[in-house]
Image 1 (cartoon, rainbow over the protein chains, first blue to last red):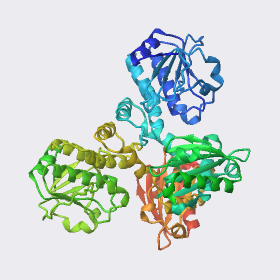
Image 2 (image 1 turned 45 degrees about the horizontal axis):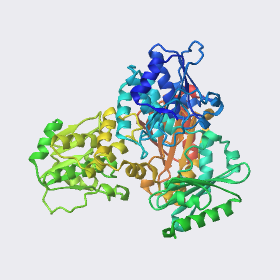
Image 3 (image 1 turned 30 degrees about the horizontal axis):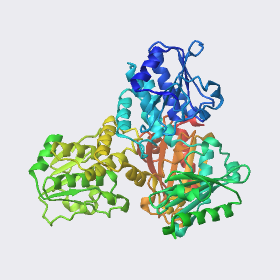
Image 4 (image 1 turned 60 degrees about the horizontal axis):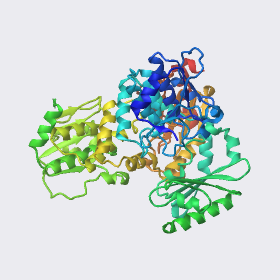
Length: 319
Length: 319
């Protein structure tokens, strides 16, 4: 069982340490990288040796955050994991399991794996916690650190759009803008730019959309053929699942994504009129009230038919 | 020539007034309506009679802001225009031209038409100015007012994404959230929900997309046939022009929208590598460096050819 620490205690642990290795989670996103790079830059500004590692290559769109100046090689003497909810998410860095001195995280589902834990499950982003840690260490936050932290906050809140956004997220964003974060460039790159393959995949998926129950249920299929035809890769798939639910009048939005074996990974999104978790539970899956998932066997038409029956069973009003 | 006033003077004018008619601009958006309803609610909380009018019907998605409680009929004794940059934008309310006592606005292009003007061209939204006016009047901002003002700020900044976003916009948003603005519901309704016709139009438009100059220029056509096939209306067209420029590697994104007479309204969007205004100026149009427009005669292929020549002429590096 690890020891839970406050922001001051986390800062003191880091102040007392040197040769610090920072671990980020696999399939890295804006929050784990922004938190990792922001912390690394802060530690270096205090004269410490620090570096960030990840089990996967860093997507090009996050390159502006990278800590460019090389650091002399060092054998880690303190290991800090940021935004890592579970050692499973360390990927190829699993060798460090059991050696993590401090974890800084905001996931309510965080699974104990470290000596010390600074957790705030109410925080919309780990980057907000890193900001508090930097201030508690007496770091003078510069524009590069500000860009890292802004990126973490913006990406985990959907640019301040999602329900997890807090007044504090806005206030810290304001401070980071004043510290020089190029928020326009960051937001454009995080939220606007899509690959050609992604746009083509979206077009094909929209073409497949069918409506049921008087337009209250929308179903979109992403088949292996579409993936091949568009040339889309794994990182082009982000943000597709919410599309059916975004259509006016839709209570239940369903996205079926074909797997190589021909089966489907199903995502269900709902608003206030239906319960995604109840629908998916009927099919052996689960999740949250507004976002849940399950696995289905093909072919597509049979899978859709079973989904529609589960929708009606869990949502009697929809007929 | 009207008199420019400070926020305190604007507040005093309103405090001294009663029977206040608030004018919003035609094709109403979140900022003019949020500003109008927010101000109206604030004035009523001080015991004054006030109401909001607009030349156009209020789109359903803004209904949560409407001032529901009826107000006894009154003959206006003070007229205040909010977010109205030009009397042309009053539409059928043009009869009030020359009778406007106070205009509150944030458009740098504001054209003089009122007795007193409270203008801040650096403010990303008029709603931010209304917030300052309410505080200066001593209004206790409630959750309904907070939702109106939050809507104005969020819609005019693209949910805090655009370059016009300021630290103050974030700080006021934080305060409005604390005052009870249901930001999740507002953001979902403003930024996520699309009509079925809009989704179908988007799909058809994506199908038309062609790339030139090694993928650095993307051209999308929205034809009258597509409008008819999708059933899309005027208010379904919002946010289509930026799509071509959002594709990775695109320097110049061009959207040609067919008009009933067969000609095209052309929107050009660019990043840092090209100048939209320079391109459109070559074709008799104009605008800003990153967003400009012009009008072209059909047919589509000839219009695209002329656009591409102008792109190359204004952007020699693109070839």
